[in-house]
Length: 124
Image (tube, rainbow, N blue to C red; front, side):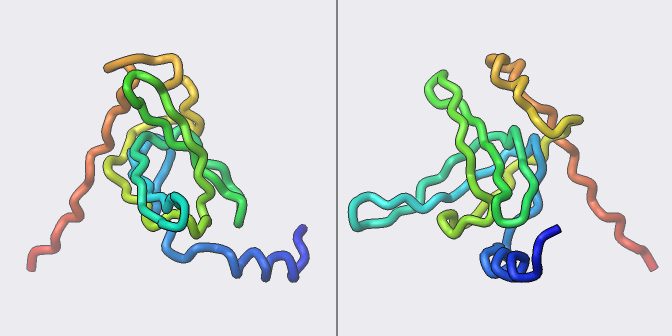
């Protein structure tokens, strides 16, 4: 039970343009990085292995392999620090937390890709 004042403050900080993605999807997060006084955009591409729920404090974890080393990064879902989240492929998984991918190597760590279903066109 949250008070109306807390809900109002949380609603001010929610992002409106959050794309729809799930655990198992391969995403590219374009994150804004500050280097001194300059700011640039750095892409982080990998598989979403975890998604936590919540209003403003919702997060998702992305895992990638970089030069043979697994790298994981936790991103706040409603942060103003990222420009876009691009969904590259949709993964077909049965669980919400894919921590078992940490112990897999090479081709065993691949996820099956969900087939995109084309909407049938109505013929007159």
